[in-house]
Image 1 (cartoon, rainbow, N blue to C red):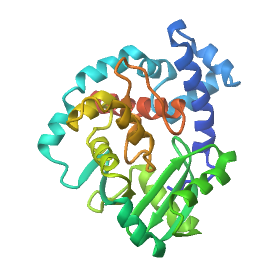
Image 2 (cartoon, one colour):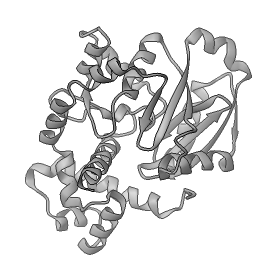
Image 3 (cartoon, rainbow, N blue to C red):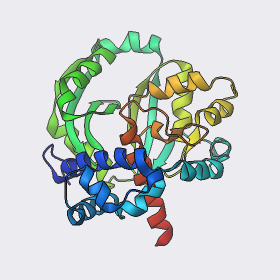
Image 4 (tube, helix red, strand yellow):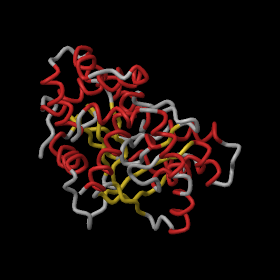
Length: 289
């Protein structure tokens, strides 16, 4: 399934994002389907169909995934997730739905020595969670960032700033094939997606921890700091989480505040809640089946 910028999935997400922001801000008032539909300027009938097409469940059922009560429940259930996965060992890979991810890390020193000859191709693509900029090297995916369509120039400028010594070339055909695999769930599990990441040793350790968080689970910044043996480093963990440049695949959206609030997100809190709610939906549907 090719994901074009003008595809229905992109149009759906624009409305869904508005709806999720409205629900998250007003869930204590128990907004009705009519309230939510009015906020996004469509009829209740069409909004219900649109949301269900995107999420797989009705907006009324989705609402509970956006509450602090739900988040705190999942936090409590996920308390030992990092311990269990550390004991099992990362083994260089992590499963995300039907995708396998492996990574190669570059320290700042290694980046300085090697990046001058690097060639990066990039493309803009529609996804279930809005438009993204996907960037690839011969060694793997080096960037997956989300943005609004009007922010393409700024997003591309950020990519250039992140890899100033590399040569950047647009190549929609090449990146489209990868984007379609990433977001359609049709990836061949025997062929892992390779990531190329660069950061400090501490950032890389935090990103390794993120890769251990299963889909549908959530952990707190404190949980990650404790798992790394630095329980007082919650703020530093937050900085490392925010510096992640490969969204979705390195699931920084699964880190929330200890009290159940979503916390910040590099690509917008509504998008973070969309990702968390969508993953919770997939888990619920799997359990039901």
